[in-house]
Length: 165
Image (cartoon, rainbow, N blue to C red; front, side):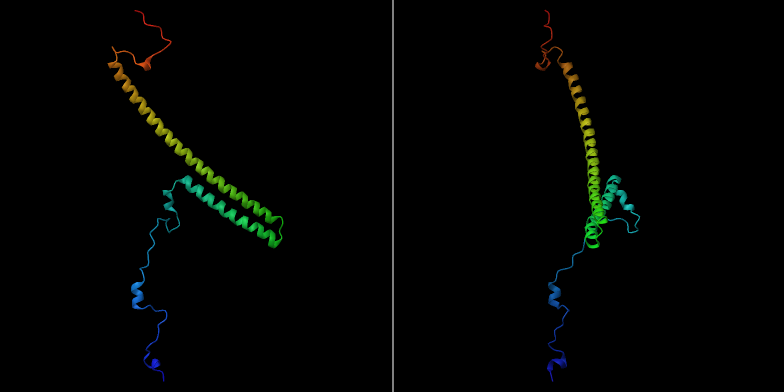
């Protein structure tokens, strides 16, 4: 009766892409590889990280997770369950955990700043020592050549006694 039913002409394939669509679609991008910890779970790759930084990070994450949980849970327990003592206590505990998170971060930052200052201090001391050695060598050369020459203006001492003739 229907000519379309006999030969399956004119049917539209839903869900299948045509050749033209396949040519026009872009290639699927691939994600870049990222260095991560070992899949075995033994965290041997963590040895690349400074121990102080790793410790501060783990402690800060634990405190931050506790802060978020308790700050959210405290008011809900108080409002929905009516626990007027436990709810505020959980909320205050969450606030304290948030404060400890910040204190942990600041202590880590202070230790890094002190390490940077110590490294700069050592570099400055080495540079000053090098400059002092260079000035001493220059002074030795000037002492050899200035034996008969007039004194420099920098060497003038107003309290010195006048030379006797």
